[in-house]
Length: 223
Length: 220
Image (tube, rainbow over all chains, first blue to last red):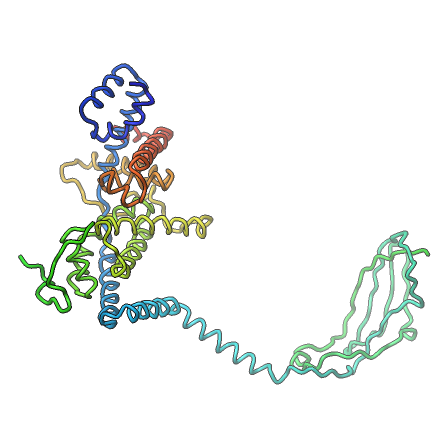
């Protein structure tokens, strides 16, 4: 008998299920082949180690839970009174109740919160617009040419804007690494803009008097 | 001695006959389950709870998951009893459900919880977290060595391929026959023997690769 033949019978041999001539032939091979003998010894050790593992005992709460499950299922069967359709329906209904139960309270809370929030804000939402009381300057080039090609980036310039309490620009200035220029507010052109009429938002936000600094990187174009 | 639930047969059929594939005792329990007789449920739980838990525990590797899986198994057994076609024994059928549930649970765990770090200590730190039936003939030292050996084997068992682990647990821990295992796993006898062999060899490799002191005891 070859090692390959022994390999086909190794599980039966280790489990003591080989008999008769097959057992004798395997045993004869093992007397000659140290590798197969060592392998079978190891597998036998693994098997006996597993068999010596103690039986795991289930916790007592498992039995209790199983009894609860059994009671619920028994109730469904008795309610169905022999009707398979009714039994399937009861099973499905029970399953859906169990599935939705964890979500009931958070879903209800979420729904109520949504209703309250929506109700509080619904009257504030409108699609009308109005002109703002304060005006915003718009900087526009004298002419716009579609054939302009960018050729150079200059060093950054910092633009400082001073705003009053109505959001109007009262003063402005430019500066870079080497120069600074004070602006003339009289040259600013103001345009009225329209904003959505959201009184609740405007009640929370109002313009404040402060300075704003914006850093820009000029780009030089050529035609 | 008459079984308790025969006293109130209710809708229970008087004619008892073993169906093909199941024994008379299994047929009796099935009739009781289908009729909603409380004693049948109790008997089923009494008969199979410990062995199913023992098997599932070895397959999933921890107690809390094993408890959850066992509940699912029995729920499926109670629900599926009307559709059970009795082509195999009741035990085979329950074991088959348990193996599939353990496998599904492991798939769900791997998919959703692989990156999570458990808050509780691992079993290797507390090997005695699960109750076992103690051996009164062993000294405290021997029991300590037994615990260490057991831990090594259990950890090695969790590291081998689940397909081979199932075959090894059914054969060497649950002591089922090859035919029963083939019926449970719905594979051929040759496949069962092959999986058992590969499972044992994988365990052998796991145990011999670890240079722990108690390894010699584990392999003894």
